[in-house]
Each structure stands twice: as C-alpha cells, then as structure tokens.
Image 1 (cartoon, rainbow, N blue to C red):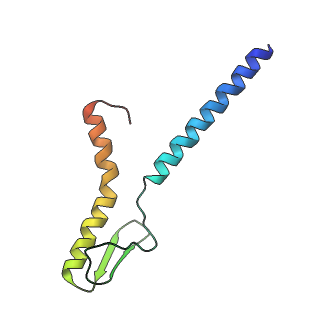
Image 2: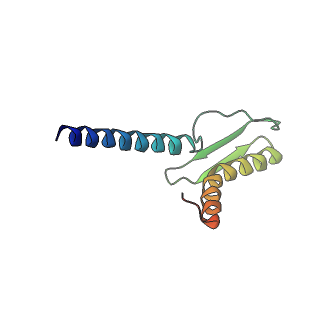
Length: 94
C-alpha cells in the first residue's frame, strides 16, 4: 500500500512539473504588448498602443516608420497562429 501511495505522489509531481513547464513555454512565446522595444531600421519614434479589445493604433514620425511598425505588430500577432497551422498541416501535435 505504501508503494502505491508513493507512486501516485510521484506521478502527480511529474504531471504538475509538466503542466508548469508547458505553461511557462506558452507564456514566453506571447508577444510583448507593453513597454518599449528598440528596433533597427527606424528613423524616428513610433508609438503603438492597443485598446482593451486588442485593436492596434500606430503613430509614427514618418510614413515609412509607421508601415515598418505595422509589419512588426502584424508579425507579433500572427507568428503563433502560423506556427500552430504549420504543425496541424504536418499532422503533428500542438
């Protein structure tokens, strides 16, 4: 009986570690949506803000920088989705 209890405890500990590791892996893959990011290739300052629904507003010193920021924000939001779709198309697990 003692062995069964220890085995159950060990399996619960392993399951908790796997769940915690999976959570951390997913959490670190989320895009940075607040704070400051410095990017090479910008000539001026670009301000990117999101409202409570996640809609993005971009304001830049010039048009080229605003379009650059648009591409960056689009890539941030879509890379996770593209990775999941690639794995699904290959028949791999998520």
